Length: 409
Image (tube, rainbow, N blue to C red; front, side, top):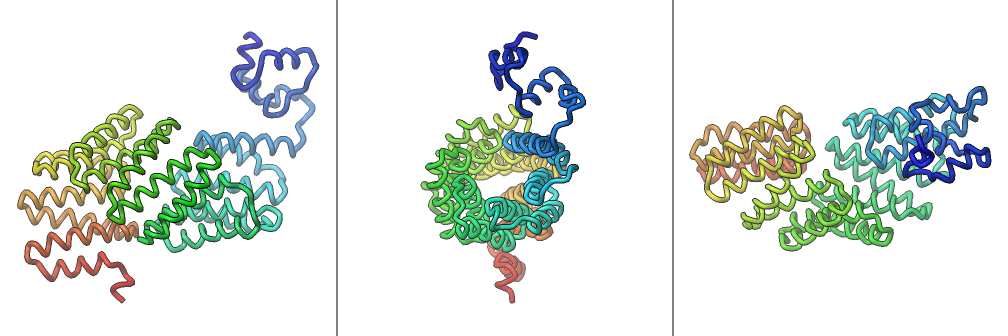
């Protein structure tokens, strides 16, 4: 292996030459790169001179943080756990617990997130490390949001934002990310005006810090808020901006999410051909990266396009396949949306019994996962169909369900 090959992109040929000549000592990070390239463990190079515990912990933490940026969650977990196996100061332990909790969140284990965050918050002094406390509160808010506990999510995310304000933490990137997540929680609670202003604040921060991903999320959040308010032209414009930024990032998951949202807005606005193009592009990208979940979501949108064109048979064929895939993948929220489209297709075909069955199945799923915003939309749409059929009593029950618990007590 030549010096240039050993150096790779991370190091330089000259640096390798200096190491070989004994002119410099590599840092732990540089040594780890060299060790990995040579297929040797780090300890192979240090022999009987063990690394100081603090350096070893720092190395593992840096490796875990780099893996977070790559979204390589197994590496995040293994590196952070390796550091936690040592005796580390409370402040360092809190940060490492947060890194492991990020891997837990990616795995969908909300309870593990809550446990690790609670432990970390107990041992970190907010007057010493306010930014770490804000990160932990942000992480807990994300876990609540994914768990459908929207009130608790807002409380934790507002606490994260307030910690940044109160302690004057100068980290615009962190603040922008907190605001994006908080705005999403507001939107899901139907607090559209607050969601929009919070997204705009995040977007302004992201633009100043060149945080492309957060800026794209901000545009996407603004688009969703405008969509919820019925301002479909503004929604489409902001989705298009988000899509452009995500494409620059090469972030396929976000690109697919924006394509899905764009297609949905076009359907609602009656722009059927534009909806078809966006959904087909989403389907093509999903196939290219082997994402069966997003493929099924794109198929659900194409079924809605077919319905809008009056082809209920095609819609039913496409959405039945999508619903089956989503059920196998365990994506209950998107499966409920597919069942909703299936119910509309059965209704268009005049099969009211089948329409009732799948609509009620969708309602049951959303009730089980406590997704009140989507439950309100599905129950409200079903109520309108029932009323059109003359079934006033069942329509009233669904209308009450769509209004949520607070409206019924």
